[in-house]
Amino acid sequence: MFKTALTDLLNIEYPIIMAPMFLVSNADMTIKAIEGGITGCIPALNYRTDEAFRKALTEIRAKADGPFGINLIANKSNIRLKEQLQTCYDFEVDFIITSLGSPEKIIEKFGDKKTKVFCDVVDTFYAKKVEELGADAIIAVNKEAGGHAGPTSYKELIPTLKAECKIPVISAGGVGDGEGIVNMINAGACGVSMGSLFIATDESPVSNEYKQACVDYGADDIVLTTKISGSKCTVINTPYVQEIGTKQNWLERTLNQNKRLKKYAKMLTFYKGMKAVEKAAFSATYKTVWCAGPSIEYVNAIRPVAEVIEELKAGMEKHAHRLEGVTVS
Image (cartoon, rainbow, N blue to C red; front, side, top):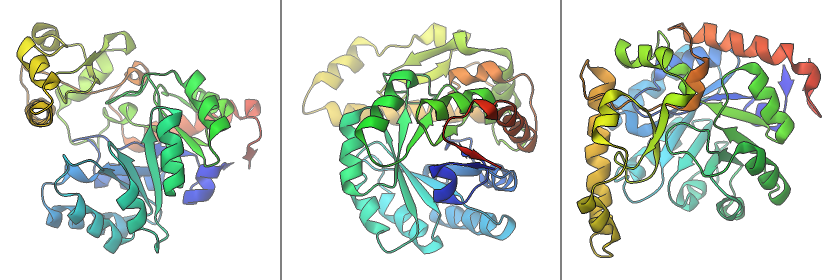
């Protein structure tokens, strides 16, 4: 066991969160994470209906004895937030990870529950804001992260947040093995949130083509695109991505600069982009827009989740002698 602020907050053996991944994370993966002594988090948006969402939470509670979390999009683009919040409240999920937008209402909702609220941040300004709102921890999204990456390297971001904030800092991005986790902890993090490593697993629901791409491509093949959600997002640089480009066209840019139309233009970009990502994730198509982070560099085969976790744990144990200020038993 590696005793850190994260293991204490969630009562887990190893300070690892299987990060919430749009379209990828599911109940099976989360159950395996819990069984492996870590924890997992699922985006609420991965479920089309509240009925399906509640069914998944019921399954996790029935099959696994340990903590798990739900990722909630906090801004106005998530029209189902109120419903998702209530479901998380009813099931008393162990933790929430908030993304995009102010987490104020989410933090207020769980004021009388044991549910912890962790907030994605990319800089000190937002970190201090969510700390003031009552967040239990901050997730430092660095520029090595998959999905919506931050602008700053973990080497700068984690120590800065650690110095400026009193609540624990969890690192997100750029980790693919146990040694990397140890490095993040020594930089000042109390644990890591990692996702891309788990895309190419047996329990992952995406297509074999998507999984194999995570095996075949590496860190140098990850590029940033604004064509998916309007914000910079990391994808694998497939021939199709090269064909369509990674920057918005002149019309999209013009609409996004118009104060009156900006909101609607971004919503349209997000809708079209997510549909493209969803189609590519679950079917064999030449329109391959696959989201992933640089840590696919560490993916060498499609394996069970349990095997990936055991390898991470073994790597942490191998490098445990380098840990500073962490109790290992």
